[in-house]
Length: 243
Image (tube, rainbow, N blue to C red; front, side, top):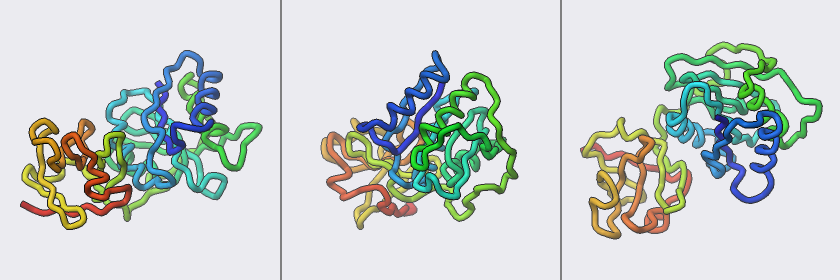
């Protein structure tokens, strides 16, 4: 399957235009919407979400990932092989955590260019055709790069910030819950937030954090919106209080 991870939003023409290219060039291949509202213009925050959520996909799946504020500029385009999956998108750090956490990785700079390439929509004109070719089993002209190409060594292994607010107002962090102790308390805006297993373990209106279904620490309120109550948004700093 081809899996879409973009910051394009659910309205407007952008995701539809990419899907049209995929349907035309890789007919019959399932196309899955994972994120259409990844952190806007923020490959760094997106990198932590992508590394967690890509684990649900299998060997041979292709993740078409476009969070690309530098589109049309000097940044390169790449294919990353990691965890037996293929990732296609801009070389701007978006795949840093995927590469860091995979046992075996390889990165290739995409050298192929279509006959028509707009300056501002490489998702449609470059990355979607590349993903379609890979899904068909075709080769894509590219050049292997050393492992240290397009790396971000200054980015932490876990991001102690809110990376994403979901439909329910829950705040998904870039922290893997497994790196936090079972009694760890998180702190945002001076408020201490204890850990719980799930929503129904607490009374309505209680604030807590838990390990979400994809392994990330998530701040929540049982039947409430944590983003509004705690004034949370992408980039909000999270402090970790040792037990």
